Image (tube, rainbow, N blue to C red; front, side, top):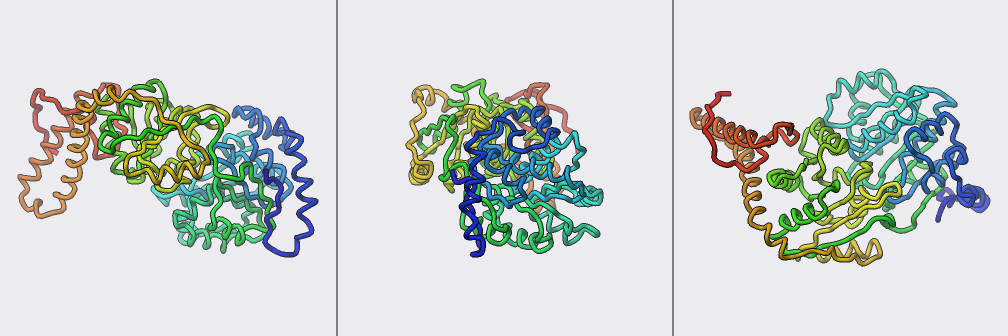
Length: 491
C-alpha cells in the first residue's frame, strides 16, 4: 500500500515525506471501523448510515483523513471501490465549517457519471441543505445558466460544457472556488479534454484544494498532477491494474460469424440475472438491442448517438430493474454504480486493455460478487492476451454446450435479418429525404406510409405494457409477420 506517500514536485519539501508517511499510515494500520473513526462529523456519519455505508472502503480509509487535514490528494483505486465518497465527504465537511456558494467543482468524463455523482452529493448533504447542479452537454444551456445563477454549492460538470458557460454565461465565474475534483482523470484526458482542463485551471483560484481520482495512472495524469496539485499525498490501495477479488472472469473463444448465437445462448443459460453487454460501436449496440428484443429479451441500448433524455431514460429503466439487459458502448464503462449488475459481457473486446478493467468493474461492486465473460474471436487473440498480461492472470473458458448453440442459429439468423431491415430502413429514409427523391413527392409519401405500416405491424405484436424506450428511429421491436393490412394513415 502506498498510502501517505509524498508525491510533491518541488525540491523544497524533500525532508518532510518520512514523518508525513508515518503519520498518514497510522489510521490505515489501526483499521478504522467507522466513518467517525476517520474524523467525519456526526451529521455526515448519519447520512452514510442512511445510504447503507456501514464501513469505509480502503480508499476512503486512506484518503479521507488526509483530505480532512487540508492536503491535496491523488487517489488511485480499482473501479467500484468508493472513490466518490472519498472526495464527497471531506468537501461536505469543509462546507459545513465555512458555508459558501460555488464551493466545489467536480469534473467527470461522461454525462451519466456526472448525474450519479450529483445524486450522491445530494443524498449525503440532504440534511444540511446542499445544492448541486449538473452541467453537461445534450441539455439546454439556458436552463443550465439559470441553475448556475442560483449559485449552487457544488457543480458537477463535463469539461467542454463548463468551458462554454465560463466563456458565454454572463456573470458566471469560479473565482471563489475552494475545491476542485477530477474524477476518472485519465479518461478526461484520453477524451481530448486537455485544452478545456487547461482553460478551467486558468480561471479558478490557485489557493484551493485539489483531488485527483482515477482507477489508472497514465503519463498524462502525472503531467496534470504536476500542473494542478501542490505537494499532494498519494493514496493508492492497489499498485497495479487489477480487478476485484469477488469477480469471476471467463472467456469464450468463438468464430466471429456465430457471436450473436453465443450471446443468446449465454443469456438463456444465465437467465434471471441482470446483464451489461458492451459493444464497440453505436451501430452495433443498436443492432444487438433490436436483435435481442426480437427474440423476447428485455434489452435496452445506451450509446452516444442517443439524445441525453433517452440516455438517462435507458439508464433509469435499467437501474429500476424494468429492463434486465443494458447494451452499451464505453460511454457506460466508467464509474456508473448500478449495484444489481450480475454479469458483464464483453461482446466486442475492448481495444484498450485498461478499458477491460473499467467494463468488468460494473459488477462485483462494494464487496458483492459478479461474473464477466469476454467474447474472443479469431481476430481478437492478441487483444485478449494483452488483457491477461495487464491483469496478471489467465482466464478460464466459460463452460458451454456447442450443440445447443448451433440449435439457436436459425432463429438468431431470422432476428438478424429483422435488425438489419429496421436499421437499414431508418438509414435509407434519412438519406432519401435529402436526395433528388424529394422531387417526386408521391414516391416519398408512399415510402413514409409503408414505413409507418411496418412500424404499426411491429407494435401490434409488442406486449401491451412494453413502452417505447429505444432510439427515435426504432419503432418495430418484433419480427414483422403477415397480418391484416391496416388502413393507411397520412402524416
